[in-house]
Length: 480
Image (cartoon, rainbow, N blue to C red; front, side, top):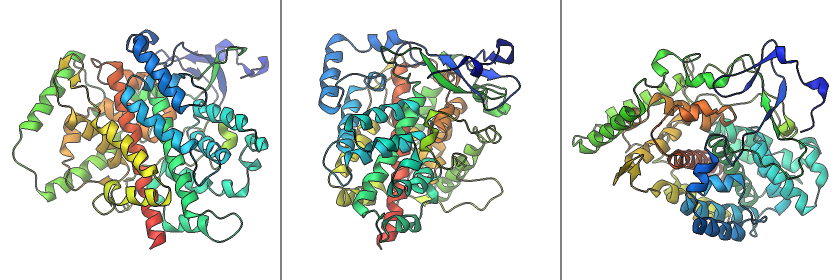
């Protein structure tokens, strides 16, 4: 980014947050100034730990894997961090390669432009830059890169479903589908629309992983400086993980990290040993309680925040449209999405596979891989069954999006996910661009970084599946 001397404030007009090193403007809102980048793939994970977790033979295997499923054949920052879980990375790259490269309903330049549109909803310059580069490599319709106003009307028609999927997927209806597939020169076929929807959901969710894992921008060797844009406001969002903006009841526990780990393991053991099952009425009550309590997590502190402007904003329409809690205070609740009435296994998989051949198998493998991924350990403890914990993480994301599993006891979410972890989950899932190092550090302090990356993988896939369920249900309603 080129920065003129006039655009940089004097040292007396800004300050540095002691928690996350973010630059804070003292008197004005909405300004953006440069900040030096940290080294390595992630701003949250020490580069040394990533290298130590990837020995030479594994690094070679990762290079071969990326060579099979990437145009560059290089390990970028994203794949280096995701490579802490090679089994998942293979499934992810195979699915992404299919979405972007293999013959399908949409031409390749459309695919990369849709990826740009999706990533830009969360101001994710890492992904936007990656797919701008891919678009340039194709060498077609380069004027589209000047912004959405330069793209064809057919692509601009995706704006509405893009923003709703990214921020409030429960609002998608068959009418949105009908507008896109109606007859006319700018209409979409159902196959094309399913391809576009999967791309949008994929890159919305991937933006969550990028921000949740602190992925650093790639810096070209000939770059003139190492800076990135940061939004500047009168308070720092890292305060959401300490006592400056949260109620006392939402503060991370004050116990030391060792006691925190032992307490979590005790709760898991106690839940596994419980023999008495809750009634359906009690299970429903626990879901409603968890859904309503999610309102208390990071919901009010952003209401007056100015929407930041950055280089990727040219690809965004209606930038003020953002996440709102599914269960808003003082409003009539939207109907709960009951997974038994429309689930991925029974409905979504077959529909998406029928309209976009084989992508259902790719997505299903990815969902199953991350859900079943385990090394049977927690921090320093070995031979641990973490199934219950992984399920709680996945289902909590769906709960925030209004999706309920009748056969799941949401009391487990309340028992297993501490407040600081819920702050992190909601931020990464609902407004990932506001994730901070402070939030990342505030939970599971005894756990390995690879375990926190695993959390981000679960959050990413849970979010993607939630978006797909709402979109595919709307398509089903349109078709019937």
